[in-house]
Length: 318
Image 1 (cartoon, helix red, strand yellow):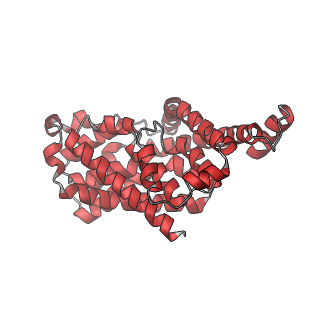
Image 2 (cartoon, helix red, strand yellow):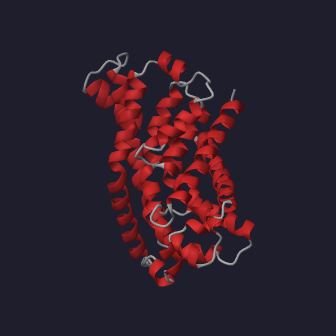
Image 3 (cartoon, helix red, strand yellow):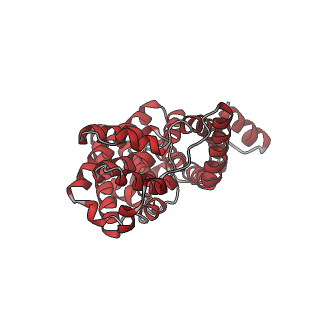
C-alpha cells in the first residue's frame, strides 16, 4: 500500500525517473513517511490505552521488596513494555530511590525503558522485519540487565543529588489517569498528540537523512567506508549516535538505508541503541537526579556495552 502510494506520487505524479538518484530518494522518503507515521499514531494510541492502566506508581510497587535478581528482571521487563517517555525518568528515579530499590536495579530500568521502545520495535519489525526487531530487543535486554549490575559495582548512591533522598512519595508521583473507557481514550489521544508533537520533526529528519543516504550515497562508498568490516566501524557508530538528537523511531529510516547499502547488522544496531539510550537530551534529563560522575559512568558503561554488542553481531554474521 505504502509502496504503491509512493510509486503513484513520485513516478506517475511527479514523473521522476526510477533510475535517477532523486527518484529513489524521494520514493524512499514518501513511502517511509506514510508508513512510519501511520504506525506511529496507531501504536502510540494503543500503548496509551495500556499506559492509562499502568502508572509509574504501580511499576514502583511491582519492584519494591523483591530479591535483587527478581527485582532486576521485573525492572528490565517493565522498562521494555511500559511506554514511559523521557519526562517520566526523573519522577520514576525518585520513586524507585524512595522505595529503597537498589540503584543498580533502577539503572537497569532506565536503560531498558528508552532503548526498548515498543513503538520503535513495532515500526522496526514493520519496515525491516521481525528478525532484526527481535535481535534489537534481545540485545537491549542484555545491556539493561548487565549494565545495571556494572553500575551497582561502582556504588552510584554517592552520586545521587542530595535533594532526591529528601523527597517524599507524594511529590514523586505522577497523576493517575482516569481508568474509565472514555478516560483511557482521552489519555491515549493525548499521548498521540504529545509524543507525535514532540518527535515528528526528528522522525521527518531521520527519514530525510535515510532518503538522501539511500538515493545519493553510492554503494561503493558505503562498502569502502562503513561496510568494510573494520574494527572501528562499531565505535564510530556509537559515537555518532550520542549527539544525534533523535529517538529509536527517528533513526529507523537511517538504519533501513544503511542496511540496504550493505552496512553490517551489528554496526547498525549499535547506532540505534546509542541514539535511543545515549542521546544528549536523555542525558541532560537524567542529570537532574544524578551528578556528572554517575552520568559519565552511565554513558561509559552503555557505550562499552553497545560496542561489544555491535562487534558480537558482526562476528556472528560473518
